[in-house]
Amino acid sequence: EAAAFIRHSVFEKFKFTVNVGISDRKVLAKMASDFEKPDKTHTLYQREIAQKMWPLPVSALFTCGHSSAETLHKLGILTIGDLAKTDPAILEAHLKSHGRCLWQYANGIDDSTVVLAPSKAKGIGNSTTLSSDATTKEEACKVLLSLCESVGRRLRASHQLAGQICTEIRYSDFRNVSHQMPIDIHGFRESPVRRCLCIIRRIMGFHSHKASGDPHFQAGAGRRTGSAQPV
Image 1 (cartoon, one colour):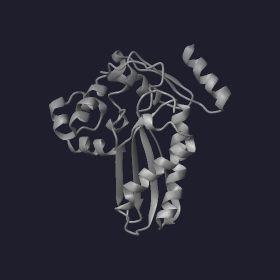
Image 2: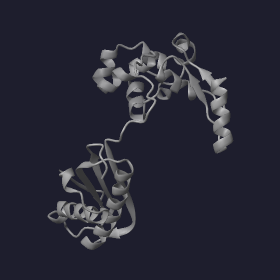
Image 3: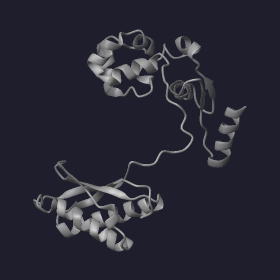
Image 4: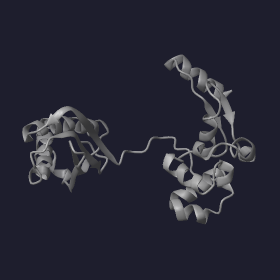
């Protein structure tokens, strides 16, 4: 009844359907929610793994991406059941720690708990791809200033201070140049405009000695958050 209530409530409010997965393990609930669609409720308890999950292709397993699936196929592992029965040491040899994680998920092993409240962001950032190349320092500065203003607004909205500035510029040849530096969070007690201008000066300082005149078409700026105090 609770699952039906969730599905119906989502449809009434947002006008799209969702699946609901029910299990005694988070990863199995996630897998169940990807079963037959749309607008369905499915269960996948540990006692049902062999019947409902093991026959599925290994690529259907949660966190098993295209690259991991290709590696597993080369090892003759085609289904989730094949993966569950494979020696985890072999998986670790080919996929490192992710191999053991996949083996655990294939066997329904997941000790993570449901988080009722969203965790605080460890970093807040923003980036953009330009419609045309920026070829001068002044053009790049305008873009980065806009990004800094956006990041600053989000920091203030979350009542957090930033302890580090990170920035990245991608050039038209797909070469990335990134820098980061710590900042004194107690030194930013000025107005939002002054804070943003101070940050943009530091960011442009990162790249001034790297400036080559090459056009760049993507830029990003971000800050790692520190103390959860108002900015």
